[in-house]
Length: 150
Image 1 (cartoon, rainbow, N blue to C red):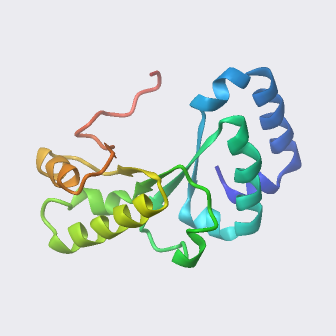
Image 2: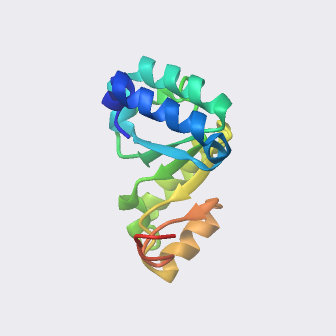
């Protein structure tokens, strides 16, 4: 979702109505937001997350490490999980520099008690490297291809 969606009253009404009608689904709902989007309207993002999380909605920070988020804001955002940018996952097995960066990103996420996902895992070697860094979850074509239905 985009930060602009959070400021859109009509979108918020639709979401609030859906959550009221499907309260049992809220704990299974994870809303993803990119770093760039979160930083566009940080105050609105923080307020929205604080309103939705008591209803059971979780939030994922997508493309973590892509460079848009100011680390000074990490303590303000209430993300439940972070998804490390796929550019790091693709070369994780072959790049010592990427391994250092991913290890640091995972450490930051763990400090804030966030579940961690490394995206872009496209080989056994990259999956092994991500596991060695103790990522909670892996995402990419090696793990599974995108599908229209679960």
